[in-house]
Length: 63
Image 1 (cartoon, helix red, strand yellow):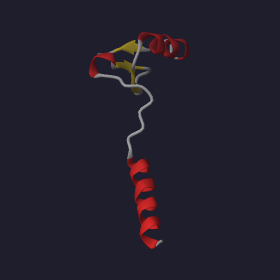
Image 2: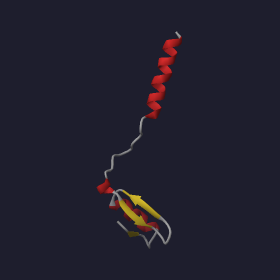
Image 3: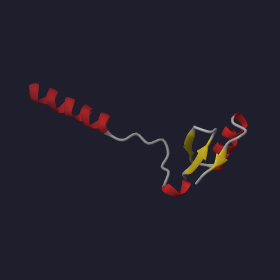
Image 4: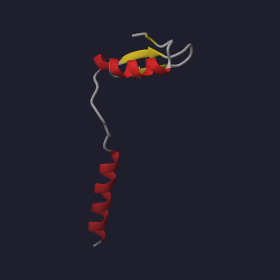
């Protein structure tokens, strides 16, 4: 009984350590953006950049 409990806990621990990925993005889909004079971020599509551009009119693509 104790061994089965230990195995069950080990399985739970393994599941919690798995990397959770919403969507896979490679390096080519990363767009570095400067929102204002001090805020930089990375977006994964130009449509996301357009959304941020509405909120931050001074936003520009860096790389």
